[in-house]
Length: 146
Image (cartoon, rainbow, N blue to C red):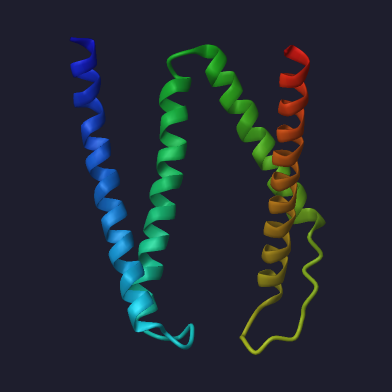
């Protein structure tokens, strides 16, 4: 009986996942067939808006589920607060360390664009480095347990 309820609960998510995948695939095929030559091509606009919508949806879901779980348990709430503080420190530190050095481009840019790009690169470097350290630590930890 419990398995039937779990199937009913996951079915709407599977349908939503399928719809998002089909729309993404259709837009990808349109862009692939049209093969725009420049970034100013209007055929890219729906694709870009769809990407923005998917990113916004992913951010909302990534924030919603931990919030719901956090309010069910005090330990999870404390972990969530510590995680938010860590993210603010990392992003803020990257922003403060980012030089924002301007380079010559053909596009109209502001100094803030370069600072933002540098900060995003620093956060990305930190996250990739953390992922590599975690992989190595996991491999060593699993090897020592056996």
